Image: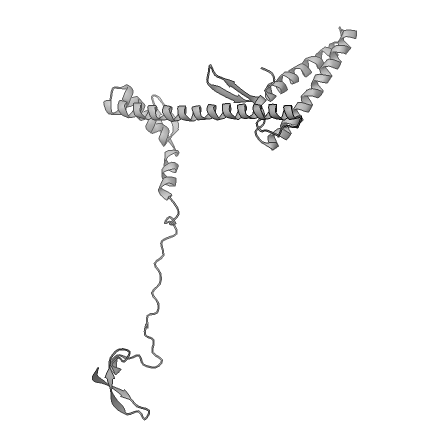
Length: 235
């Protein structure tokens, strides 16, 4: 070690001492009561509040907001309000119709993509409905053979109507328990209306010229048709 520093002893006199690891020169040592960092700890840099957080994808949100923002454009002799997305697609379509090759290619590819995705979603939906209906019917039949009550199924397999000619699947029944409660109340109301209709028909047999009974019967018949249509039982 080199001896190039002086340090005060207990009596305040300067005495030489070895400078080395853990023993800096006296001139550069911290003085008692003096901070080694007089400016304090540097503040952490903070992004402005309008900057996105690390977990956010703000650009997606901004893009969607702009895509569906309403604007007013000229359409012949009138003005129409469209979203920017609608205006862009319309512009591409019009340019394609006018013969612009680039627009024609872009519009055709866009249309093909949309139709392909829609077809895939539709096919998956039909496949799911067919499998669900088939599995539900098998379970109901199994429970019938065992003489036990089948589990509650929502939607019920009987409410799923599949038309293989058109490729459509329609559910004429409730999807959730909340919907089923409404459905059950509506069915009870329909049953009461049908009982009222039978009662009125019986009364009209005894008094066929009673216009008041005829009017009430006509009203109840209309209610019956609307309720049955709502419940999917009137086709």
